[in-house]
Length: 284
Image 1 (tube, rainbow, N blue to C red):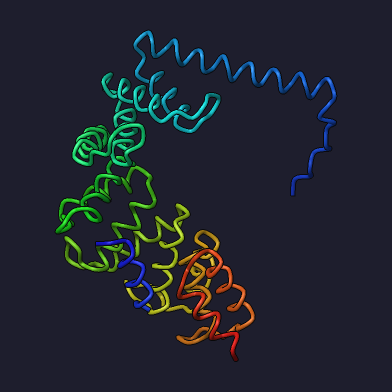
Image 2: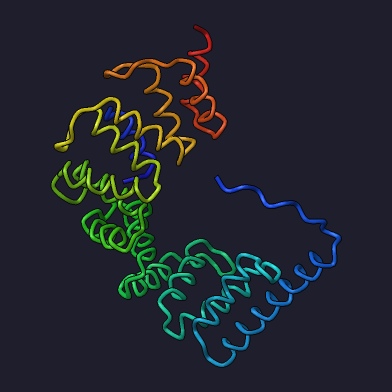
């Protein structure tokens, strides 16, 4: 189940004050900056020492700093070395992070099979993001997709508060991928993903609400609110769907001025169909 196909199927389904500015050249500001840098340097040194003394957490956290270039020069090779050491110490998050580098080919040669092994270990240790990453490989990179194996992994990740996994599981229940179709369960999972700030989850829940499916009260007004939330979170697909809804239909009052602005936002974000719809709207 490709994420792109999922997007198409969803569309087819229908006041604190500002602090005074400080003079950057003042002794107070300079001292504060120096102190913060000193603390950052000490933090890196402490992580380095922790790793040298055998702390898997120290190796992991220092590896992430090298990967992000936080307090140290960005160095993917050094990050991979540290994260591999962390995983050797059986730190679940270290194994996930090292697996991610293997999956992406950052600092090490790309090795999806090895990444799967590391994701599996981390997922078994209840690292939700690892379960989600493992499920995505099974659905997006494996032919044919192993939906039956992926679904419980998405659900486990969702239960571990990975909202993107809730969205994926919801789409599987809606489309009957690897499980009997169940719109009620799909709606529950979409709601969790929307609450977790996944724009596509809000869009999917909006589609069900617009049609009054899954036991939901049919409400164009509520659906439009969900589309707007989806746009706030996702300027591409979310704004495309919201913009199209604003053109009217299905009980939604047209607002062409807002539709134009919303489709323009989606177009600027790179949504090709939004650009085409915007062009058509501008011709009238």
